[in-house]
Length: 109
Image (cartoon, rainbow, N blue to C red):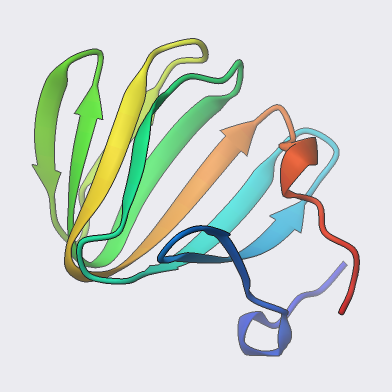
């Protein structure tokens, strides 16, 4: 199925984290527009997560180790590993999750 990002609805999933989502049978792609200083507290989930910084900067703490990421930086987080994120200024990030994040499926509208 074809998708066009600008035409997709944007959802604020966490304060300051606005996402657009595409789901396949085994993956979820999340394009985030993140407000300066917005943060996701430390958490874990069973999904593998690959974080791709497209624009701006992101502080990503994985298993207690902080990484400051900029455009082109990619970090793979195994399922079940605790992690947190905070935007350093405005940022755009593509997260890829496997398996599919059913909790990121939203009804149209």
